[in-house]
Length: 260
Image (cartoon, rainbow, N blue to C red; front, top):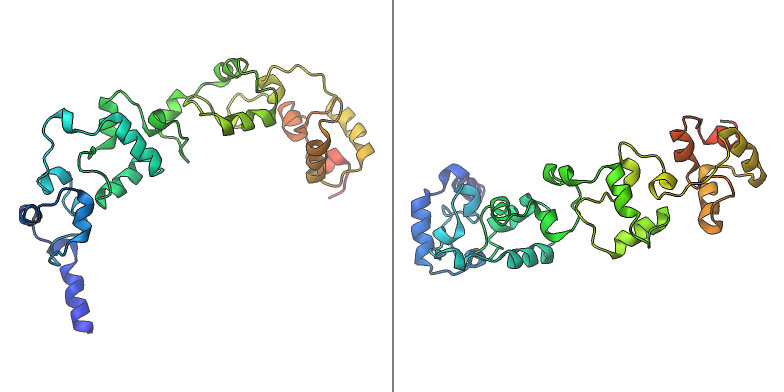
């Protein structure tokens, strides 16, 4: 049994697969129409399960002899978009993995990035409007700076607070130029400035005196209070952010008058 396992392992090494022409000839003999059908047939051990991985820069249409004749047979941009959304594809590598497993239709592009570029679409995000976990370099270049985003948000009547900002983008499609987390922006000046809410707040030292009335023991208690009761008069909701921007914040222990 051990000897058989060793033999199989050697056969399955990349270097022991037949060359592309031999594999292609075998594929043509199977008269398959779709790449996914390749996974269902019986193959000799020296014919790869994932030919797209072994034979680089080829393509399923040629490999299976299902040649696409002219651009009219290529999948449309809308078909590709629907497929990407249905399969929750957020990156080119995700698409490539599905393609290599034969799970994309035969007339779908081998190179998704090139296909989108030819259709004047900058990225997957531009096509679907679904925010990826990590933005590509192309997407990052399209993000609005602080000033432009502030102007854009000022025109959305439903957004008038930090909470409503996040709630709004949960219900609406996020444009490629909108940042889902504004506080991470380089020029961030606080929610009041961002939402054009001019409020007069107490200085840090004055706020410290006022906050003693509530006898909070930790920052968590403070945030629980403002979440349930609203902003304390003349004290910003996000005190740590506000006074950090003012360069007066000294930490929660100091602000609440507690000893470390």
